[in-house]
Length: 395
Image 1 (spheres, rainbow, N blue to C red):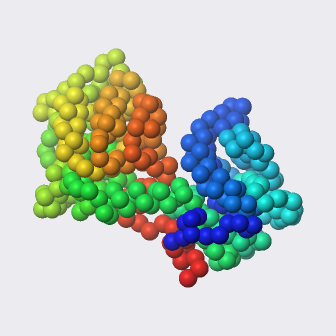
Image 2 (image 1 turned 60 degrees about the horizontal axis):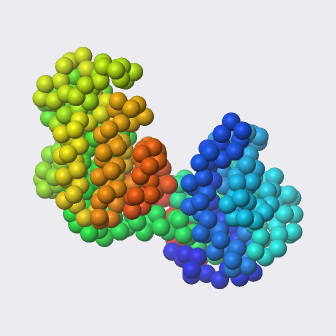
């Protein structure tokens, strides 16, 4: 796979697929520009090389219709401020307006195209729509890792209609950190998995089991594993359909010599809204009327000690309902342990990123993926259509 450093950008017309699917506030201003800033090194490299740059992204789910509230115009305004240069906003991503804007662009200038998903051809991976996106383009660059698990026109079909392709710096960095953490890691490797359901994470767990030495399981999904071991979990959320799956998983872990850590105590309450009644309980004797909403202090210490033994740590998923102050300590302390770790640390997933931001630790972790669903699919060992397309391009 080529990167920006492997291609000649000078005087080229470059089509950059970025991920500017960012939240807007009530005044339709960008509320969180993390994803925009992540793509700035790629944008600046292309512009400094004297290329004409067309940037494309989606925003939300307009389902093939023009939805004014999902226009990328606020993103163009915000990007102008970040770059210190004017960004031309184009009211369509294909057709006359797009082609006219391209003809007027000067080398070293940038235009942001309107929401790709205003056209149903984007999510349908339509070849004709992809051909229109690629019209007049010399080089296609994908820096949108977060949508590369989708076979959409701007990340998949488009490669058939461009002379050359390259990965942007952010996408390459995502793949590089995954490779370093899970394919050629410094061992021992600790995998920290949390979240609500075994059903949504079992693919991740099974794929990573043979790649790690230590597996730490928290969050509500841990309840299913504990019930599989015959331990009481009170009135906690449990996926009964996955108890046997959990039991088989723990058996395989033992056969592979993987050290698995589950909670030993918890913070429980009668309900998620009964924060005032939250209490620390031992998992040897949890009252039947209480449900678990966070790991307890002894578990935090157990998990911290396991993390300290590792040379590489990968984290996905909170330990409890961290949005509620009474149930936030487990996730916060785990995040601190990972942030303080001296080895390679990689974290990703929407709730994980939110937790790191909430506790002011985002910049303390070695690498934080902006990929969301794409990061999870990579952890599951699935091929990403956008990445496969880049690897195939030019062959």
